[in-house]
Image (cartoon, rainbow, N blue to C red):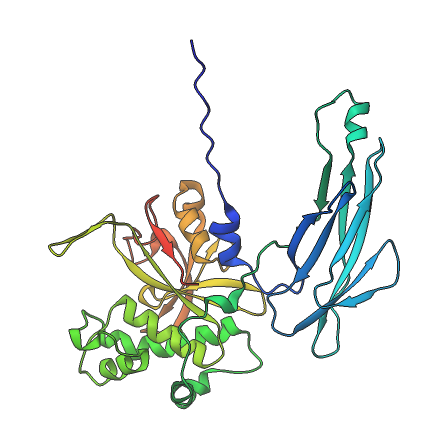
Length: 350
């Protein structure tokens, strides 16, 4: 009987999570390449997704730090039968003249002769880069996802309209919470299906139609207005669209569950994305005491019954103007199909 070939499913977290949720990192790998010819080793170069990083300082073999734009460095090993270890130390240089703390990156190598000595004649040489947490091999960062940027006129409008909700002494998440409460009070009285006149309008044009009583708005309008307001006030924010569309024709759209537009803000203090949703009165979601979480974490934990039991929402009560923490299953919102289901796609624009 012929043996059935195994099916391998790759969970490519680099593309499906790390690229989407990497914070601001002063030191990231730009490239890792083997050395040419007979030499056993690698050449590494560095980059950063922080705009104020100007270059890198690298110390190899316990030598003096050398400055360069990419910190390009070769690590060379001997062709012997021993396990070998080497380290380099890397600092990011900022335009302020300061440097990041030194980061040690460890390299471990086993040459062909090592494996031959273990009677593993056909085994290739190995080089392993060992760090915990690992140096990111990612080039994207939070700023790459800030697509709904405000024009100069929109920035002036946002400052005049909501500037008193922003403080330099608070984190971006705390400022976003204050801003979200103000916008909830303005938009919720006009919640409903928007007319065709809203199509193609800039977010603040939609806002003006809603608050003037000329039109209504639902999740996508709430999300666009909040996202634009946050970005206009220097709070990095992105819109995330969710749903599972089966088919779209001129006759009918068929979808599995409900489509929704939501938002995440990037908090500089904790260096992470955080889910905030004005249509759910939600200022954050927590797993027990851990959080606030991002939208991908919410999607994941909703699928696990044991994790789902522990989810808690930070809710804004518009009547009392108070925040409160409640278990997800005690929320007035009973339908969470927007965020759950194996077919639900979280769509981010890069």
